[in-house]
Length: 314
Image 1 (cartoon, rainbow, N blue to C red):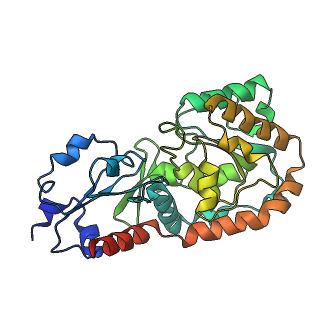
Image 2 (image 1 turned 90 degrees about the horizontal axis):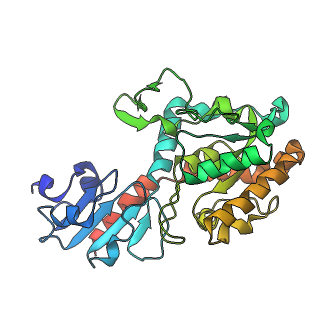
């Protein structure tokens, strides 16, 4: 069997026990139009089609062909679309190599000066809104990474394991990972909590993308206020994670209008900045420890391959 006819990920094909089956398995790291897949040599011959993405680009494809199953970085309501949080998997694997979580300092012992970090590699509309709100409400003194410091690479730690210039690291001597997957422990050690700004993919409730930005908070035991697509906090709870509705008003998560949702989210930032951070941290610490432990237990790649094996066998 010529695997190159059926897949561009032969190692996954074998691990999912798909050898000898008429299954097309294709992985893409960025958006490709539907026609890209229909032009693949095995398209017409395939009895099933497995498409794997990384940025919630392909979650609508099962609607186009009954043979298609998709694994991508989102939860959807379609029964043939499965969550595969690539960026979470990479963040966990990189930290297994660098072990940065062990460099985190207990904030109750160190008492950081800043309440929040606001990590920005590049500006997009909602990050600009957050930046503008911080300035408008004179909250720069509470937040690490502001005061005109929103610069390329501000969420990157210098470790010697990677180059900030090429945005990649090598780990285990054979794999390359984007350096945004590195836990920014030096920044976390200077602040109590985090502002997370995820990319807003598609209309509400269609493409709710969770990347390494959220993953680093789960791994780093951070409470966070979320600026991104609607219902992402609901998705986190569905995945087994604890959110912070006992501390802040998380009803903002269900608001359909982006600007209204983000304004209400920023109201929670303002509220937290007026609280005693140590008292808040003590209250939520069991949730933070739960989130970190669950994050380290979950193996998205193994789960994906097991699902493929099961579907391929039917």
